[in-house]
Length: 107
Image 1: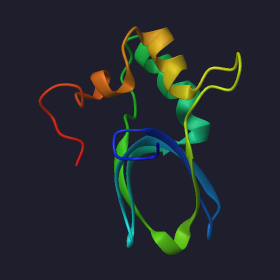
Image 2 (image 1 turned 90 degrees about the horizontal axis):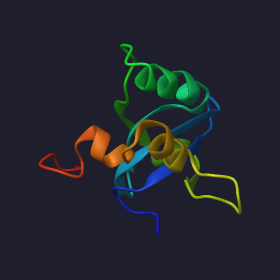
Image 3 (image 1 turned 180 degrees about the vertical axis):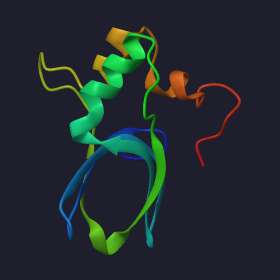
Image 4 (image 1 turned 30 degrees about the vertical axis):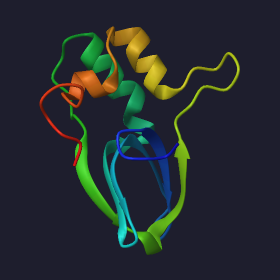
């Protein structure tokens, strides 16, 4: 299900953007996401894997009028989800890496 704590791909319009990250809140007014532009995902993942400083994920709010779609980041057959790629390469889930699996809350 698409609910807070899930990895999602967020499609926006005006201007068109695609973002990936963890959904922190879904409200009638809009979407709160801790994420980054989908085009930066591979560079971000490589920086973490190599122990380099990186841009990290930003906390953002997008008003519902900009939201075109919210897709759950899930695997499709043998194609891994972005979250699974992260876990495979880094050795922990995105939630654990960001501290959501411990003391820090998602909201």
